[in-house]
Image 1 (cartoon, rainbow, N blue to C red):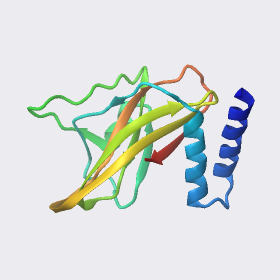
Image 2: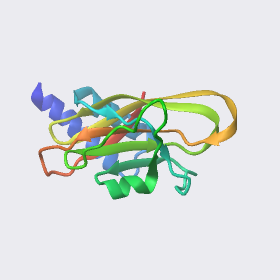
Image 3: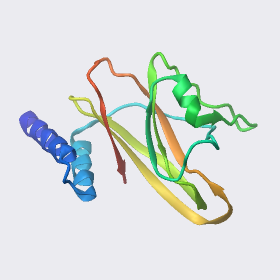
Length: 161
């Protein structure tokens, strides 16, 4: 059974690396990796915003491992409801998804973060679109994840559920 799981993961990787693969092939491969991955703990970051000097004309998929890089994209939004979630940069890194600017109320909710034995990480999320609004917004979500013990390069896949 373990060999079958490994073969599926390798096959999915080959599909993803293929330069002629379509979007649907990549989504299928990410789903297959998600099926064999193990859930891991993550912390959803609260009370941050996307800075207004970030180009939000297209989707951004970010992997950030230091405070300086994080501050290029996000600012703190402390308010009466609470303080921004703390990130321990010595022990954690951040995976973020930023969608293009929109005039529709939109939220992105993390569903799960899973990892395989060979350092494939799958970040699953849900996008909920609401009514039109009178201003523009930049929908995003970000999660803090413990850094892996292995120094092997991690491959991250984003999977909309």
